[in-house]
Amino acid sequence: MLLALVAGAAFGAAASLANGLSSPFGLGDDVPDPVREVARVVSLVLGPVYAWVLLPLPLGWLQRDVRSAAAGGALGVTAAVLAYYVSDALLAYGLPLDLSSDASALALWTAVGVPGGAVLGALAGAVRRRRSP
Image (spheres, rainbow, N blue to C red):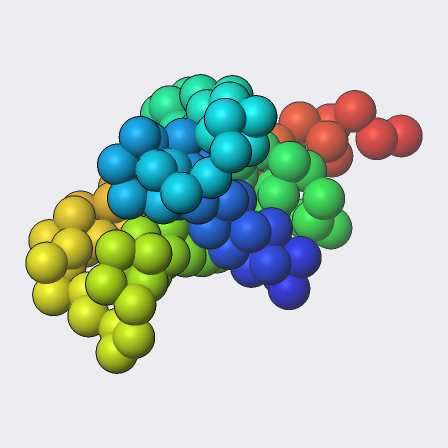
């Protein structure tokens, strides 16, 4: 489960940072062009919905049983969503951390991500169990 939390948080923070660095506004204004181009590619890989939908699959695959696979998928997506919005807020405003402007989006994506992550994580765990001798 710890791996799911860490991987999810790293995914969310990386997506947020890549978005910030690839933008010509904000952070992206102060970075060299090669860094901005790499960040743009990372943003194109981690940003779309399909990347977030695929996230719980390996997290569920790594768990021992289907129940823990569901939990791993849900925890990973939850950590990713939280890390994404925390990173966005820190990059935009710095400390003290204020998530009030993102509260409704954070709640929405958590409400969608937790059951979706659980279902997809469980699916990956079930496929792995079925393939195992």
